[in-house]
Image 1 (cartoon, rainbow, N blue to C red):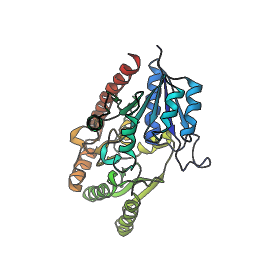
Image 2: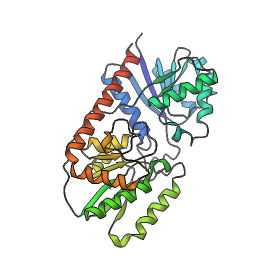
Image 3: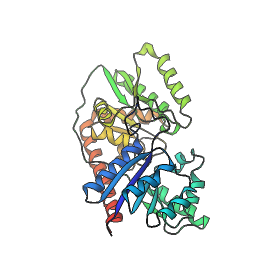
Image 4: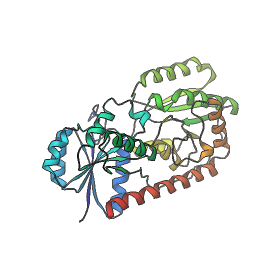
Length: 345
């Protein structure tokens, strides 16, 4: 039977047609789904991606496309909705795809309850994009008594487009620490590490972050970041705030960085880091990023060690970026094989 895949995402609640494109904000979740949808299409599998307003739009999209598999990206469909959808579309396999490890998921109050409820449906599978989280979901469902091989591993895919970008010595050190402002993203420690690196190198720092998405108690983090740079303004170091932009514009911004930083406490893949590396920029991160070379990973609680990694990344930027690109390509090629095995076999 020919398989037809339908990715369904929920439009952001703060969508504004004046400010945002017709797909909502260009988020990591949207980009992740688009990368996988495009990969399936390019591999000869019928696949489509849609963005809907809420639960009530799902039936219409499924009727219009007639898929064999529907992938719901992230937790937003109330479990009770599947009592109706399963009857309307009995031949569809539904996949609820998780994008977070437990430390992050713990911040979503409905997460564990909903995953447990999904597991009661025979035609729903829990898709997980990280091996560690996969094991934890299986253990939870086995203990609950509802595990029936309904957890599947579907890791992130990333397009194979890489550039070369040589470090240019200049007055300012541009460091990009992009992404939504959240506690687990660890902006404050990374900002202090970047300041130390700039001081050691005799540079003025421009620490680049995103504004517009303050999530999961990230408000105090942003206030402290602003206070930090306001209190050291005489040093010449600056906090540069960037609004969220379409992917093409964001990649152009990434290419202007000297170093990227993603020393986060919890990750499953880290698309922002992949974007920086794809543009030829060395990335300093944490061991939570599965494809990042270990010698570019630092303890996210130790600003001195992060500072050391920043300096190493600058001094050996070309070779370290090439190694990171190789590791990212190796990881994402494995991801492609896993997806194709599931949807072609």
